Structure formats: C-alpha cells, structure tokens
Image (tube, rainbow, N blue to C red):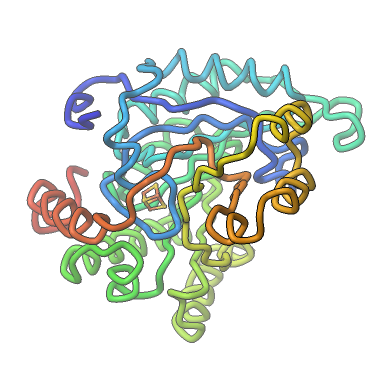
Length: 326
Ligand code: SF4
C-alpha cells in the first residue's frame, strides 16, 4: 500500500473496525475502534510499522463512511466513544478532520447508555484520535479545529503519543535519524504546549513510554502544561514500553485445535502450551495481544534500515520545519 496514493484525497485506508476495552476508564464501555493503515514511523512497540504499509488496504473510506461505521459500532456495542488509531491519523489530516466533523454532526445531542456504567440518560458520545502528534499536526490545525467546533470540541480527545522526552530517545525508539527526531519531538511539544496555553475545549492527552522517559524532563513538561491549563497535567502520563513481537505461528495438532476451537480464551493458551511437547513450547509461543488487530508476522530484522530510510524520506518531504504544511 502506498500512502502517497492518498495524498490530496479525502479517502484513507483502514484495516479493521471493532469494539475494544481501551479508554473505558474515561469512556464507559470503551471505544469502538477504527484502525487506520500507514505511518511513517517505526516505533519498536507498534504493530503498525512497516508491515501495514505493505499490506493492501482492507477498506478505502471517505470521512462520512468512517463516522457512520464508528457511530453504528458504538450503538451496537454500548460504547460511549469511538477511536481512530492505527496507523497515523494525522498523516491523513484532511480525512481525519472530515471524520471529526462528520462524527460531531452525527452525534449531536446523542447520549449512549451503558448498563451498569452510565446513568439512565447515558453519556454524550466522544471520539479519541490517537496520533504521534508530529506528522501533519500543527498548533494552527488544533486551533482551527477548536475554533470551528466551539464547545463541541470538548467531545474530542486528541491523544498525543509523544513517547520520548528527548529527540535522541525518540531516535532510539523509532530508528529514525537524530535530526529527524529532534524536529518531530519539537513539533510534538509545540502541539502539547499550544493545547495547554491556547485551547479551552479540545481535550488533549499525552503519553510517554517509561523506557524513553527522563523523569526530570517529564516533570518539567507536566509543570509547564499545568501552568498553561490547570488540571491538564493529569492527562500527561507514562505507559509501559512493551516491544512488539509479531505473533509466531504455532503448530497445534488438529485434535487439540478441535477441542479448543470454540473457546479460544487466554487459559486455553496455557492448556495448549501444556499439550505441546516441552521444546515446542519453547520454540513456539502463542502470544495473544489484545492490542494486536491482525495476526500477521512482521520482519523485525529489516526495521532499522527501513526506519532510517523512511525518516529521511519524510524529512525531505516535510522540509526544514519538520512539518508538511501548517
Ligand atoms: S507513531 Fe504510532 S502508529 Fe506510527 S509506528 Fe509509532 S506507535 Fe505505531
């Protein structure tokens, strides 16, 4: 899949749509999730990376089609929010902006009841956009979004996956060049601080990964965010770094598969392991990752070169300010 084919269009490539538990502490019922394809980065903890870039898109969709699928999914699964992740939604900014506008229009006045989790009237519908906050995302775009939506912007969460507290740490995580990472990192912080100092309604969260986080720098960032928008530093947190390992394919004898086919839960993995010969258990681990929407092995070996090449290509395209356009 060539992401350049989507340049200048409102269409974007999607991999899957499904209900997930993510964000359930903020949005009762969790989020109905759309997984976009394509990202110029190659973070070591991400399933997306280069693998998805090379897979053909499952769906090519216009913004209103995406909003319609998300809203229907939320209603069907009693979830109070939708979520666009992937993949890098900001890379297809015109498309993503179109999804946000269509979502807000479709859910105006809508409330979703989640049994046992919301009051009887239900909660307003929210939408989470998970982005690295550097690729095609700029303070002026965030400002424009808030100015256009007004108070309705309070139903949109922009989650900035900043990941690292410095450019060199980001380079370690992504394999991109130090110069590229310095620019991207600066862009991420510009967006975060713009949200803190200038925005009132749009909800902006930020996350860092523990292995790439210097606690002193993180505290300084949190203090600065809090100074700009009291209370916002609560939305700036640290996540565990879990390097992504592509699931390895296990050979499971058909007789075992038949026994466990109908109930493939986590405990069954243990049972399967117990049934496999000891050395096979060592060699083949079935890794079931709730965050992993596809079961496709990816080649980690080529990632470093690939990342450097992509980072440099992107840098050329982005120009000296590290941004494609304002
Ligand atoms: S920026 Fe996000 S989507 Fe892109 S590789 Fe990193 S974690 Fe994955």
